[in-house]
Length: 345
Image 1 (cartoon, one colour):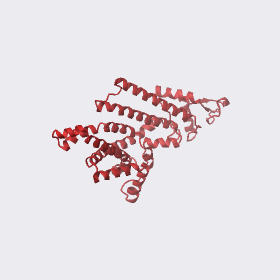
Image 2 (image 1 turned 90 degrees about the horizontal axis):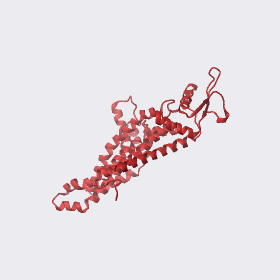
Image 3 (image 1 turned 90 degrees about the vertical axis):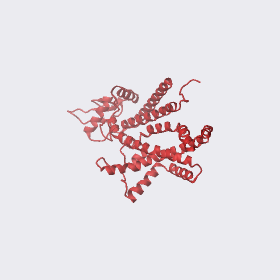
Image 4 (image 1 turned 135 degrees about the vertical axis):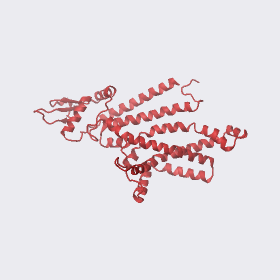
């Protein structure tokens, strides 16, 4: 088991390294976009890029380096010329900066000359709080609906739940949130139409969570409901549950003591994996509702061509996805003792 865990962690590290390396190299091959702001801001940005090893800073124009990226105004009769360093040299300097200084670079358009890591840290809390609330709401709701549908199998209740699940799971997220905003915000006026500011009243902030939490939860509720219903229906028809009934247990006792325990084995690892996976935020939902999380920041960094922020966002999404996959596999072995990862035949 320990050998399997070490192997999976090593493979995850290599996968993340390859993904981020390819992202950095491919993005740096794109045409350079100058930062926004006046001369003082641009000089500060290029000096930071020079310190990170991404540009050359020369006191004269040097055609052999290609076209200069920026020419600073004459200072005491002399200007500085900034030229782009070769991409692979930038790549190795990027790795060195992360390993030795944990420096991921600086924003050039979104928040000029502010550390990309600082910007991400200021926004990740919104995504984490939102997604924790969605997990708290979706997990028990989905499981309870699945249990109810299984216990009422082939009844009107089962058909109604299954139909609603199929309807909600078929509606795209951007359609769902657009409909809810139109109905509850503009038509009825019950909820705020956009994410409340930090200075808003507490009641308004609480209302601001309702639409995004519900939209994030719908897909999970449908998934858990269908999965729990299918697992519980299969377990309830098994031989060992029939044996438990013949030994004198009532239907409720047999379901609670045996059926539920075995039906939940594949469910709990999925809950863990989903919790880690959704911490990355929802790009579409955060943009439509104006939530200042890292999902919206990812889209903004693409639109603004602010690549240093994009790299940090990619690192978070990649790490969470790989971590969720590892914990998902390992959790099966801890929940069900019959499963042992990496064991010899």
